[in-house]
Picture (tube, one colour):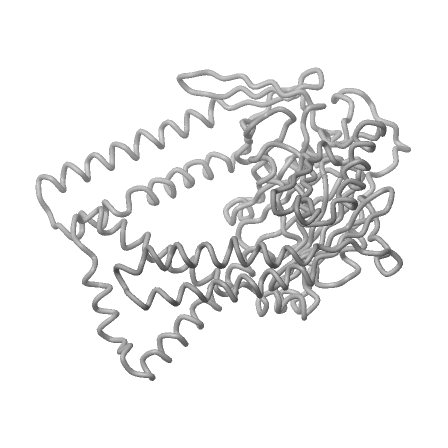
Amino acid sequence: MNKAEIDWSVSQRQGGSALLIIILKTIIDLVKNIWPFAIAILLTGKSNRSDKLEWFLILFSFIVLVRSLLEFYFFRFQIIKDELVIHKGVFTKKIIVLPLEKIIAVHIDQTWLHQLLSSAKVSFDSAGSIKTEVVIDAIPLTKAESLRQFITESKPLPGIEESKTKVQPYVQPIISLSANDILKLCISANHIEGLFILIAFGLSVVYNISEATGKETTGLLSWVYERIDTNTVSGILFLGFALLLVSITVSIILVLLRYSNFRIVRSEKGFSIRSGLINTKEKLVPFRKIQYLSWKANWLREKMGIFLLHFHAAGTLEIKERMEVKVPVTQKRFITEILKDYHDLLPVKELKPLRVDKAYITRNILLRGILPSVVFFIFFWFNISWTASWFFLLIPYAAFTGWLFWKKFRLWAIPEALQIKKGIFGIEKSILIWNKIQSVQYSQSIFQRRKKLATLKLFTAGGVVNIPYIMHEEAMKIYNNALFKIESENKPWM
């Protein structure tokens, strides 16, 4: 379907697949909310109370499904005079008017059901909007792509004949992940995070069953505990191996779900990022919205040359979250390709770096080592006696982490941009163009003033860049240069 064949000024309905998707989505939402009650009915057996509950659930499901059908019927959208107009609502009618020039990005998402029905959900981010109100649950995929192209390219309204010699839109694939790249991401994933996710899910299930049945579920936990003898070395090893195996499995599943079919395409407007195995998401990150970029890696990924790149985009918190994409960088050229549309990497070998002062280590030992150790020791002394002395291990830990941060921190600056390298157990790098800075904060504690040190915070529309514990003279140079760029340059920050 060619976008020129679609008359967007005519009132459009969602696709026929939307009806099925809305119904199934409603059923899934119901199942998520009422499955503990269903288990309660099965466990408590037949009774008048159970019968009433069953009838209530049936009636409630019927009402919600009918409401979904009505919402589908009354939903309309069209483009009138360069404005996207949405009509929706059953009992409360709502008309949303969104000027095309205010639309920041158009996102296309596909669940497994959307993919099965060759359809997609379309959502819009607009300037000045706190959250997305304009969402089209399901239209044919080709139609969704056509709508996005029409809006992002600011095409004239349908009915105006386009030139046959019109140049095709510029599109350039720059990143796609191979099976080997996915394998590297699986091996180097944060397996501890996977373990915590599994534990949280398990506790949530146990809690929901307990709430629905009104019975304690400690018996289940006791049953598991009795079969694992933690008093023997073999029992501890078995438990540790089982937790490690489960956490690795969960991490691998999360990586596959998140980064399968991952690709980035550069267009004239920004980066189009598509990813997902079951639920496919396609996001547009406009060039003008990018405030600065950072890429980080844990210790293992740093050794393997793998980073996760983050676009720090302007907008409200919810818009930032929707645009937040952790781009897996498995090759050095990927970073170079992405930075072409922002700013090239700085020639760090030719520049003298600015470093954090060693006083940072001393301050870290005091604030994150000595003070919390003393407080925890006094607080827990009355309960666990001398065992509370273990809290004093925070002191060498704070000294070690402070030393690692001091050792790794580097800042390089040129008239157009600055680049920062930092980290503790991993590494993080970032690059920021001066004219993206909206404000700068210079601060000195009593300790810093005595040592002639200062901390800077560079505020952008996409987040804050911190530069701690640098010499006062160097801090003032950066502070004055940032103010000069803010007040004198006419380059837009967005």
